[in-house]
Length: 226
Image (cartoon, rainbow, N blue to C red; front, side):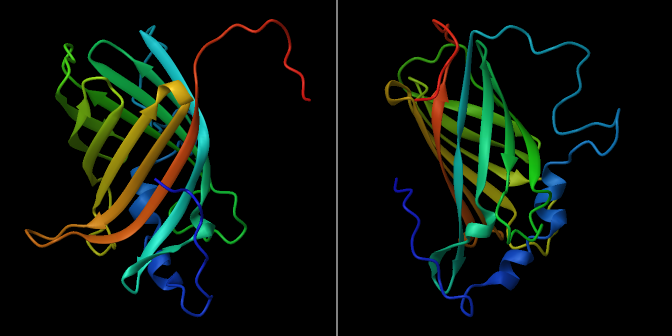
């Protein structure tokens, strides 16, 4: 999967009106942040911290945005973002918290706040085996299903978007992930598309993510810049 940004289209041909039609109700409604102390946010409520996990992995990276227009994918750099994820792995499920920041000066707020928090839970059988594993996804953005390989390296999940208007240019997400543990790398693609009955899916936007995987470690001393 390539993460080299293609040349941006000239301003007069870029489909900014289509991008703006995402609207706050489309994505902002999928990741509701707490607006005041005591009000629910994106994460499920609990009186206690997350229980101790069998493994905890974090990753930090960037997402490059593209919009589908004139029959091809075109870069939409105003919608690029930086992000970090903390993933807790248990015997039969994972729980991930994603923090996302859009820093581009031209971002217009059409996909919600610049700073967002998302929650994902993936449930799968305890015995992973070597074949493909069916998975169930529940998240602050919507619920769905998917498949993960037995080594927990590659996954594909699809979900119906929660809180999206029927007039929005998308109503589903498709997420594909590749955990390259030995390289300390995660690649992921998030697609937004419109599904209408039995007709073919209509692409709207996609985000190509590339992140560095991190795991708990001890340090010999304080890290220093070189």
